[in-house]
Image 1 (cartoon, rainbow, N blue to C red):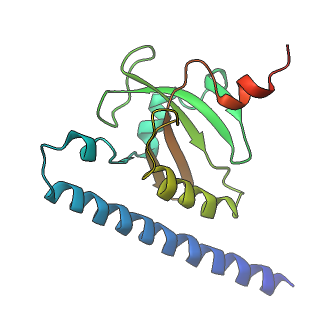
Image 2 (tube, rainbow, N blue to C red; image 1 turned 90 degrees about the horizontal axis):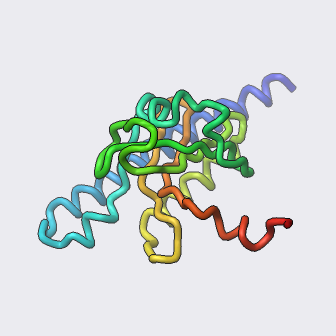
Length: 163
């Protein structure tokens, strides 16, 4: 039985490593295609996802402090943070661009596929009425998504809040 569990873990590790390479190569090719196109098109370059380091997001959220938690979902916690406009550099709280950083629980092996799907889907889908995916972090076992911060809360909060 131990050997079966070990084989499953090894298979999942290979899957995660392969997914990391696929994700990086798909975004690198998308980025290079965008960079080779007409640079005067602001609309095309505004949809480019940023790749954050774990340290940048750790600093942006104040070390993932409990008082910066906005909520918790099936993936994990969502933290409030600040980054510099048009970049990945952390900013002082209250300055720069306010973001929501969604972290995938490390023990959620099935969540990795959904995490990749969310990047692929929301990285291409843009609409004024949808929250904007700004970027992502994939470093070792860390999986984080960076969204624009919605100051008035989520649609779910407005639809299902109890008064």
